Amino acid sequence: MTKLQFGPYSVSFDKDDKVLYPAHDGQPAVTKADVIIYYKDIAGVMLPHAGGRPVTLRRFPDGIESSGFYMQEAQDYFPDWIERVDAKRHDGSTIHHAVANRAADLAYLASLGTLEFHTWLSHAKDIRTPDWIVFDLDPPGKDEHAFTMVRAAALDIRGLLDELGLASFVKLTGSKGLHVLAPITPEEDFDDVRAFARDAAELLAARKPDDYTTEQRKEKRKGRLYLDMMRNAYAQHAVAPYSLRPLPGAPVAAPLDWSEVEDASLTPRSVTIHTIFRRLGQKDDPWKDLARHRRSLAKAREKLEAQL
DNA sequence: GGAGCTG
DNA sequence: CAGCTCCAACGCTTC
DNA sequence: GAAGCG
Ligand SMILES: [Mn+2]
Ligand SMILES: [Mn+2]
Image (cartoon, rainbow, N blue to C red; front, side):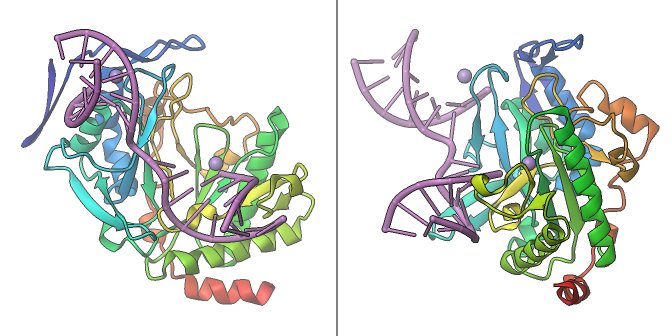
């Protein structure tokens, strides 16, 4: 039994050497202990962004080659020092989400086999008003060129947000695409924020109708990159910055500097559990200033509507 | 991984 | 006791 | 109201 102490909180676990990620592409296997230590050590850069939000867990107690499951409901057996928040569903039922606030919280949840953390776009404290807009960009095809289209789309969104007076930040999803995130003042509900995001996406699609589409029906997209705004709805979530992904090689949903998006050698799984700390040793967290760049949507909406 | 249920 | 099952569907759009 | 989508 290994025991990690975090001030008054302790996290105990066994089977330290259980392999959760098999060796891959010349990199060693990643064990249960590796994952728990990863979350303990990444907490300092992850929690300023992901902390304080309702989380959904994606657990793989037997590793990525066995089946996993999502877990929304914080279980009664979680320690009482893990915060919970009540989230009403539209059907009237209530989900009790866990909220990660400290390194101990991440380490405990990782000890359950949680590989991937998702968060809401709002804080537990103010669950109805998001402080992030997320543009979810996935490649339309599976060839090498497809990710080039994703990079171009991210840069176009950055350009538009800049025109509208909003800051933008970008991360690898660690799977296939990129997320572009705009920090906003949490003062409007999900419906209003999503309407803004949809208008912005439609403007972009109107400017480059051969490259982008907002069509939900796959059949109508015709090889164009789909600008998906549905993540900006109530009770939806996105993979947390610095979360691991349950994919071979243990890729990380890694925040990037914008200059990295212009680099054609970037791949969606460029950053892994094996490289992230060396990377952070050489550069600051690219999202360090994210919360300070929150802006109200009011002015941006005026500018956007003038373009429609 | 942990809890609850069945046999 | 061992073995098996459950852990997420929700929100929104389009047809 | 049902189906599609993520
Ligand atoms: Mn995506
Ligand atoms: Mn198991």
